[in-house]
Image (cartoon, rainbow, N blue to C red):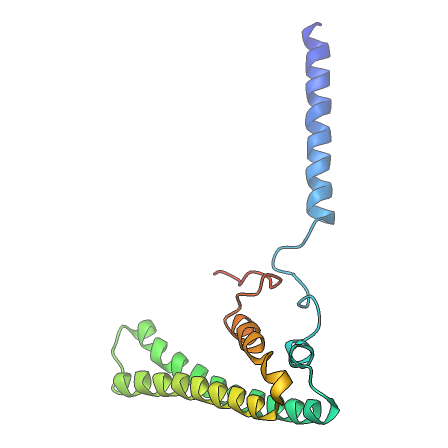
Length: 159
């Protein structure tokens, strides 16, 4: 095989490789776009795990809605405190209320944990003797959901 023939085959191989890479980039999965989580929302899965009847289901959804709103308010306040806390890094100065901000952030975290514990107790109080047997499984799944240790969840974005 002469040199010219060798270079033709080499160039053809590189062209095919480049076309394959372009196709992969255009048709492959988009980075950071994982879509909605697979399967039903956790509330629906919780109803199935706990085997709730229609009356219990309605109460459960009300409890979950109330808990979600309370957690949203706390998270919003916590974000405001965190922004203020870390804004001191921009100016290289220590805020006057630095320690009180940290105490407020910690208090809100404690409040979120306490509210979730009370929420789980409220759910447990809904259950009958047969359903109580599923409560441990529910708590385990709920904690995986809260801590995002779900095998079907997309990885967290890293900055």
